[in-house]
Amino acid sequence: MGQLLLRLALSAGFLSAAASRLGLWGSHSSGWDKFVSYTAQVCTWAPASAVSFLAITATTLEVLLALLLLAGFMTKLAAIGTAILTLLFALSMTYSQGIKEPLDYSVFVFSAAGLLLSTVKEYSWSLDHLLKN
Image (cartoon, rainbow, N blue to C red):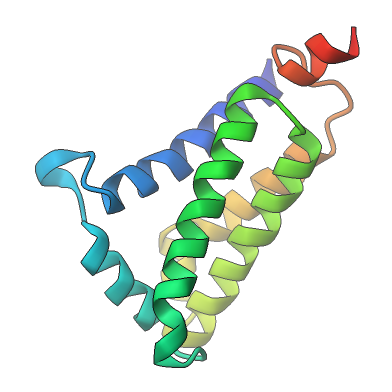
């Protein structure tokens, strides 16, 4: 049951962030332009011409990983992808803004949760489990 809750929590975090960028949270949404601007602040190491690409890539990966985790399909791979992607976010935030930002947003926790999920041997309540049996 713990792995299911972990999958749901990670999926919800990714999907909520993407929904906000795309305006799906209504007046509570950050919007795409603000997200691209935030991406530029977090990725000071990247040339300005790469910022839109990074924003699109991050959002696409977050949605893809969230859907895989939600369905429990290719769960171990999705969990490892989650751990790597969020660790890259955390390192980029640390480089550009200092350690406080990724700690305040629990990005290291999110990364560790993905890593922990990748160590689970059996993903019950998942497509992986149904396809295995």
